[in-house]
Length: 490
Image 1 (cartoon, one colour):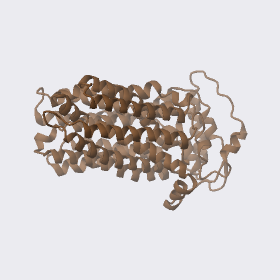
Image 2: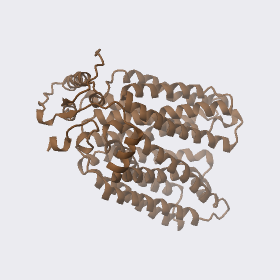
Image 3: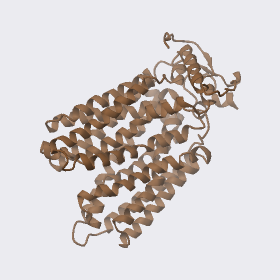
Image 4: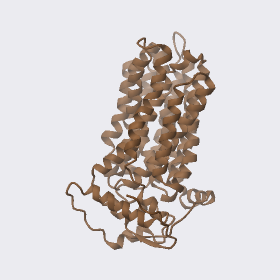
């Protein structure tokens, strides 16, 4: 379907949001989930494969250099999110989720050909930029294409699939880094796995349309109407009869070309200060807990339970399974019971479970198996809560800066969780490397993590937004809207 990109400049009335939100679940929506949601799987796969450091011997790297490879990837994610987040709000979702996936595919593949540290660092950074950009473009597109009554469970499930990718990476490493392959070959194949999956997905993405909501707010009303009509045709192909949308639900839009940084600051800190505080709190607290445990779980098993380094990967599988099942099994409750209740429950109970595990750990009542079981229970809930943090920041701000809102809070969470937490907990564990390790420092670290997580849930209860089953335009009026969508739909 080829449509001229005619741009309107005056006010237009649009039923695009109401038409999208009243659609039944269809094969089209499955295509959106599969085509866009794979990015989290790729990220989990990447981090797990690279974290095993199979390239360390080949390239002659020290432990510090291996850590630098991980840090550079995270730094690339932050910069990529900030850079591509602004571009996706200006140029559209579809263009960016094609570009960012291509950046990741090329950079990750080239990284597998590394011959020195500097070469590996450069292309790990670029691959990280691609994945960081993916987060902003795909979360924006998913929220804007999925009907409001399904949006919560879909977003939470998609974000939770990171752990499916991590589990795949761990399985792959058992073979790739074993004696079955030469040392210089296994890790390189691992670097190519993500791009091979991405090549399949990029063909799926070519069939996905631009977000009609983005087209609507950028003056391309005719294109938006035609795109919605095509989505409706695909959604009704199974014989479902679509109900007409009353004209009273129309939203009057005056297109905006560009949102300045000053305007963004005003939206965050003047128009929606409590929502900004909410987004900051949820993202930082979940990132602190996650990165504190995830990046140090192997060290805990080695230092306190005597698990050989080569065997720690086996304990990772149940840990990853708990993280994956939580969003998949209870994500729908965020749409039915509600956002604030479920965020308080997942954050609060996971924090209480961590407090319990801290007591049992200090008392010496846990072994490697029961410690892993505790982590599984904690992160069954915490994983759904963490995914809801990404959902929250992607739906509580106006459409015209959705990508930038995601990137802003993602950057903050990576800075806090990706840098501070692993550094802190690594030092706490470092005191326990003797024959009789001192458990006190790490116990207090767990207590701190638990209190932070519980605080995040309480903040979400008081400052959260009841966004379940509500149109995005009802949650936050678009900057381009000349009428208040809450008044229109009431």
